[in-house]
Length: 184
Image 1 (cartoon, rainbow, N blue to C red):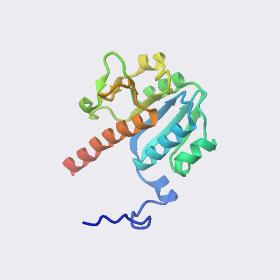
Image 2: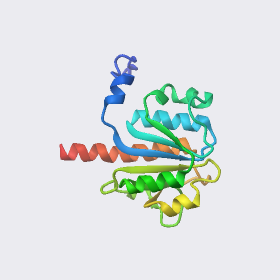
Image 3: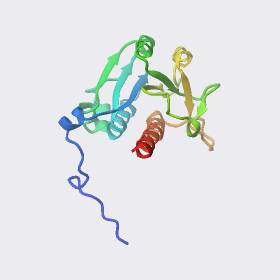
């Protein structure tokens, strides 16, 4: 059996204007002190692919139009809403006041293994993704409603932050899709 790749036009993707006008999944991303523009750009691209609400970039993280971000984002900085906030703690406090559930992606005591996490009752949600070396800062972990951990079985103790974001975002959006299918 031949498997022919679709052309770009056959994929029937939204243009930038229609993407901006479309309904988004009620998931925000908080980038806590990421040092790699390549990781940030990859997270922009994943956020575009799954129509997330907004990315908040905090602390000393690079911001668009950083060359590394643009290289991996492939235009997603133009489609995904984003905002720079210097202080992640103030941002989390503001989001909590708005009723947003704060979910840290981190290996921590009392973390929930990703496959056991139920999105029901946890929306809208902000995922905190931490620094490539230090992870999510402790002060933010203490403020989180939940910590999610990706189960791992090899010798390494962690995954790249951009890879982790893709796994977690897909898991959450998949639950949203299944909920819509079951309710529809």
